[in-house]
Each structure stands twice: as structure tokens, then as C-alpha cells.
Amino acid sequence: MRNIFKNYRIFDIDPKRSRSKDFYKNMLEYRTHVMKRFASAIKNPSKFSCLLCGNKKGKEFLALGKYKLYECSRCALVSPNIDFAHAGGHEMYDDPKNIKDTTREIVATYGYRKKVHAPERLAYLIEKTGLKKSQIKLLDVGCGPGYFLSYLKDKKIKSKGLELTEFLVGVCRKYGLNVASTELSKEKLGSYSVLTAHGQPAEYALSLPAHGIF
Image (cartoon, rainbow, N blue to C red):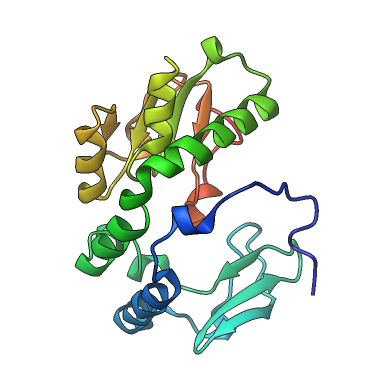
């Protein structure tokens, strides 16, 4: 098996403060719910298609019951073999159990995430782009509850978030953040110098430009 963590940066994160007390138990319960509800979205192995290069050949990389991840034989991308037309968007993210899970695991740990994760994201962004803070006009796609945007707001950095989950849009607006529940395609070209998509599904993140909307 390839060493997928090679050259990854290690961060000092306290898992007890970024997750709930019964995180693993709750995670397995939520995953069981998702697997049952969206079982029809799992494609037959013969229907595999790499999300990055379109290659039709892949080998099993990891499995949890009938849910499997596949490694592309051409580009080595590891991805799920699912039909996103049957598992995505509002149907999944506005599901009551997802709202409960997100509230417990992310919204409830908002302060810690903003204090620890947000500065790391900004530092990484500046390192990779070479931009000064004054040059940053950022669009965060799938911004979640907005702790990164909140940190940028404190630093006087121009930013906007896009989030399709109405529950999370409400959380963002509670904190006075500039967030819209519209599609990326609605944004005007040339409006941003940086575009981020932290933790987005592979098929969505891979559709974004390397950096910025030009």
C-alpha cells in the first residue's frame, strides 16, 4: 500500500477539543444511517470511473462493508465509487441526522476550531500563494459554520462563503458573516484572488481552478 501520508505536514491538534466525547460511537451510528439511506448510490465495481482522469480501471483500496474506496490504476487517486446524483446536495446535508451530527462535532467545537485550525489554514494559504493579506479576496466554497471566515473577518481580510446547507448558512449569519446559499457558477469571474474548498467531496473540489476565479 502506498504511504498516503508521505510529505504531509503534522499539526498539533487536541482531538478531545475538536471532537465530541463519544465521537467514534456517534460517527459509526451516523455512517450506518447514511449507508442505509443512500445505499442505491453505490455503483457496481464494473462501473468505476476515476473522478480525476476518467480512467475506468481501479483496485480496491479500503472497504467498510459494501462501501469501498478505489485507487485509480492510472493516476492513483483514491475515491468512492458512488453516483453523486443519488447522494449529495440538500438531500444529504439537510438530513436531520446530519444536522445533529454537525452540531455536535463542528458547531459545538467552533471556538477551538477557529483558534487552532483557522490560523493554520491562513498560514498555509499565504505560503502557497505568496500573497500578502492585503491582496487576499477569498471565496470559501462549502464554508460550513464559517469559523475560517470568522477568523479572516477578525484579521480584516476580505472574504465570502458559499454554503448550500441552510442550517449552516444560519449559523454563519448568526456570526455576521458574508455567506450565500448560491452556486459557484453565480459568482462573477475575476472577483477573487483565492478560492478554498476545505473538506469538499473530491468530484466537487476537482472541478475548481487551482487558485482563484479568473
